[in-house]
Length: 114
Image (cartoon, rainbow, N blue to C red; front, side, top):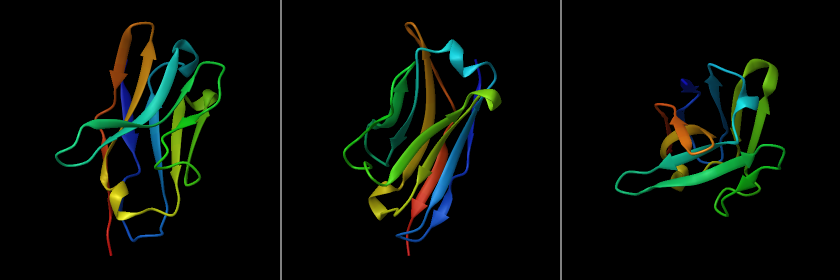
């Protein structure tokens, strides 16, 4: 399973970015999918995820600002990030899970700075 994330970049506080993650097989094959992030010197944390057949779940720090979505036909998941803050600066990773196996993308850097 291969995942390719893109869409990161440098944005000013209050700006927006949309991350995309393309999976090389049907997203319906997975039990869950989601986005994580890792800031320098910190652990990788959940940003948003969704279980198969469920609704998106968000971390408290991004709730109301970020939106997780997916396009099953394109085998792609998205993370729309609005009202970005400097503390959102991190490498963002996408992940899918099938039973006990997790597969990660390589990550895309998001930097929020004026």
